[in-house]
Structures are given as C-alpha cells and as structure tokens.
Length: 72
Image (tube, helix red, strand yellow):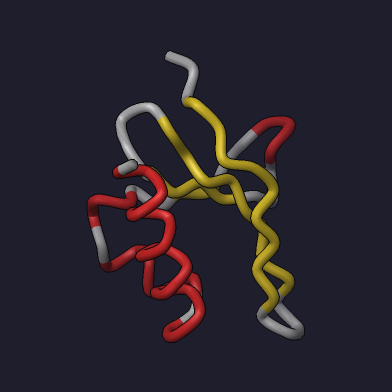
C-alpha cells in the first residue's frame, strides 16, 4: 500500500533529521493546523491520507496522533 510506504519514509526523515526537515519535501505539504487542532501539524501521505502529529520541543519527541483520511 502506497500510504504505508510513504509513512515509513516520513518516519525515517523524522527519526534521522527531525520533523523540521519535512518542510523541505513539498510532497508532504507539512503544515501547522488551526482551530481545534492548534499546536498540531499535518503531513500529506497521499491525496486522501494525512498524518497528524505534535512535537514536544524540550525532548524533540514526535507524537503521531492519527493517520486519517482528509475530508474535503
């Protein structure tokens, strides 16, 4: 499944280089979220699926909150 492969790439980038490196890859379209998800970020795994995560700055721990279909 393509989403699983892209998630594995996403995890590898975050593990090796930190979540800020995701912004260098336009395909992930990594962005801050607003509203009830303020403080969280979203990365695109496909047109439909996003990984929603937050970052704890003190320890640089990434918490994947969910992988979900994107609602249009």
